[in-house]
Amino acid sequence: MSSKLAIKIDSLSKCYEIYDAPRDRLKQMIIPKLQRLVMRSPGKYYNEFWALKNISVDIKKGEAVGIVGRNGSGKSTFLQLICGTLSPTQGLVETNGRIAALLELGSGFNPEFSGRENVYLNGSVLGIDKARLDERFADIVKFADIGNHLDQPVKTYSSGMFVRLAFAVQMHLDPEILIIDEALSVGDQFFQAKCYAAIRSMMDNGTTVLFVSHSAATVKALCPRAILLSHGELVVDGPASKVLDRYFVLGSLEANAAKSAQLVPHPESAIATVASTESTVMQTVSCLQPPFERRVSHRVGTGQAQFVECRVLADSEEAIVVETGATLRVQAVLDVLDDCPYEGEVGLVVATAEGIELFAINSFFQGARVPAMKAGEQRVLEFEFVSPLSSGARYRIDLGYRMPVQGEYVDKVFAAAGFSVVNQGDRIVPLLFDVPGTVRIGLSTK
Image 1: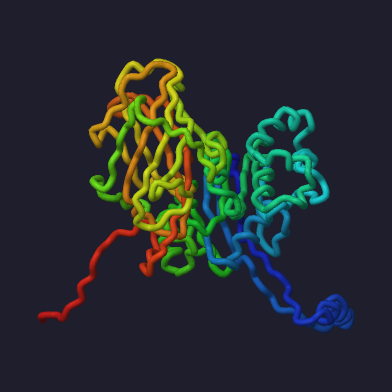
Image 2: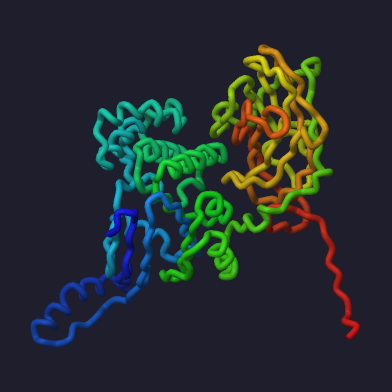
């Protein structure tokens, strides 16, 4: 196996024996052996189900590969064979590096142990000594953010709490190969945003990632390469966009939102305004979402000023669920920590929960400026737009404040707020954007 490869898979197959009745299993254990003793061809009392058939794939170190396919296509079996929790019927799997895997919910956890005890149990299974776990424990607890439940038995945890703790453990143990099988789908959108940011950071540091998801947006956001499985066979292996197009053709995509990710609404449909310090400061802290610092997945910037609150309003009321076509106002508060001596610009990006950026509103292009500010000041920012987003998906708000004309960021926060969209009318909108249009059908003049 080449040192440049993280995973080498050669002619991999997995067959399960399916018995019609318990007695057939007993027959299979006894009768073929007796038939061999009398030199007869052994009988077969089961049906074969080939979950995987002759798969050959090489994955380089540092690659991020999405695995897509319909339910029953063999994705989970494929990952379990790589992890070593299943043995292949035929073929070979070689791995080069320590593997961390999020496969079945709660796997590797003892339900009777507390979350704290399971952190150490999970780490020891992965070969991490206690001293290293002690060093990372505070970071694991902070990332999981499950509060006092840390010392409660994990059998009392919700599915979201399971994933929070499991992902926090795996992420902070520096795996060389990270395998995720749809586990993040049970987390809330703020935790998902935090996880995607962490995965990207691990990828930047050379971690190999295998990611199973039914969401095209997620696969495109994380994985340049994808593999499509169908009925246990490898259909196509290549650039993620081309593989997902093939997935669409098979009619198997359950979350096909990424098709319209490049659509951008008309700029005249959005306005951005900057409120002065004399305006009424937004004092009401969001009560519908987690506290601001827990929502934010990560932030960058010089730190001279920082966003400290953000909320979405529909019909003047704070909302986390809005209707398709609603007029939305996004209010944000910016605290000035150090002098910002130049005029600046503020912007808002609406993105999917996975981080696919959909459209932006920027004060520079709307003719609004953030004036020079002194330390201790506070500014209220308000963005307003008619939402073209369709129902059935979750979205997030990213905020940015920087020096003028695309200068250095003073503060940029990701996942400052989040909301979902519902469609109360009869209109069916299958993709991400509800774009009004007409269709005309006429007779040919030929």
